[in-house]
Image 1 (cartoon, one colour):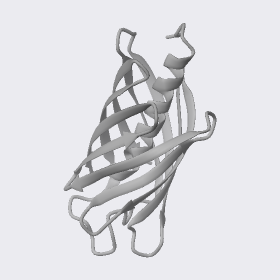
Image 2 (cartoon, rainbow, N blue to C red; image 1 turned 120 degrees about the vertical axis):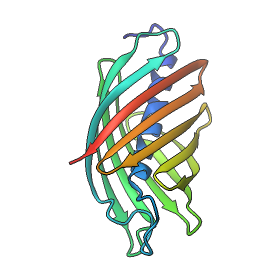
Image 3 (cartoon, one colour; image 1 turned 90 degrees about the horizontal axis):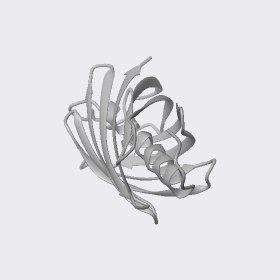
Image 4 (tube, rainbow, N blue to C red; image 1 turned 60 degrees about the vertical axis):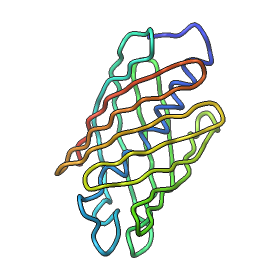
Length: 172
């Protein structure tokens, strides 16, 4: 799918780059271990899904991510993520922290477009709800992780565009 406006593909790509970065939190176990919510999270994930811009044609997207916990308590994680579709490509990095009450905060940046923003949310069992923001858009993600599989549903608004997505990942 190609867009005639240069801002529409950029905004859609930025929204999804940010949202996919948050997959990392979907790897949390149902009950946080004493060592932290990112315990055992280290590794590579890959998968596919569909993005659906409002008024546009659904498009398949492919993603690969690597997550590296920081520190000894597993309350922090670094992310590197690359996703591609027929129309979009992005390269994202992020740093995220979960406190003892399962409140998640963080920052993200998309390297090819030199843009970034903030993350807030919470984890409950195998489910995570996250809200992301930048100066131009906002989005909410709902994630569920069971065993070595993650599902992510996205609802984003910004730049005059509504984009929805559904992605499935599998830990390698």
